Length: 320
Image 1: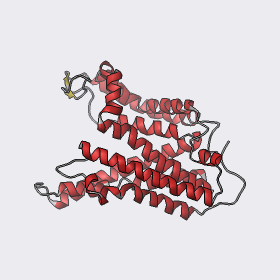
Image 2: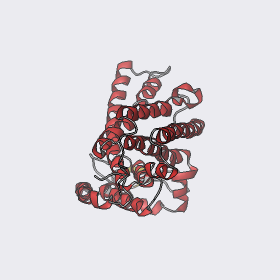
Image 3: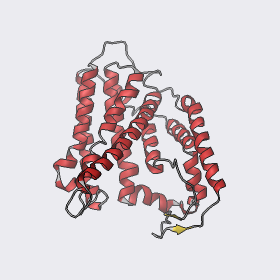
Image 4: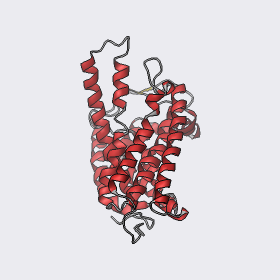
């Protein structure tokens, strides 16, 4: 049943928006205020020291944003502990919602899964050690597949959407406006890219660096915003932040699907847990590529047909 008590809005929509923008500022400010968090030509964002410092900073920003959101929910909306858990999509929880969300995205990504598992023989390298490395022991994997999905979904879905619900904003408006806040949180990568591209020792012209950075940032903003539409939809339909995190983790793991070129060509950097050497395979026939693009289209159609069915839940935060 949707969470929409019979009461006037406790806060205005502009207030919810300002809180969301404040969360964004809190989220990205440490990357520029602290020298240990900055990526430089000598210490990239993938450097272990930078990753550890950023993970600690993100944890603190999540706590700070949570305190602000809970204060607003309690002081303005008179939310009880039970209301808080419901608004933040923490409880009640149904892990079948996570499984259905994963199944829905697996349909959408059936083409990339086909390429990864069959064409590139990725199934040969998946075991417990590989899983542990991808998600926990490797710092980049921990950041990309655990910390980033949880931090971003908590702040930009649970906290932001809870305030929009308190403001009685319509579900459709929530779906198509809150992801813009999420997308804005990624624009700062442009500054990081330009700073590293124009550092001493880099020979690229400033105009070229800025142009490349703008194109990259525009693509990232578009992709993250479209992704945000979907995850906000899942969050409201399931009332389950765990389902949103599942979607985010899966998409981070898969990356952006191939939309050009042939599959199974040349060297593929699929590494076993015990080896850092890429496996070399021969070029595969064009039929493998035809199957891939057929599955890409079929997966998109299947996603469209199953979207409502696989996101339906009795714990929905709003009726859509």
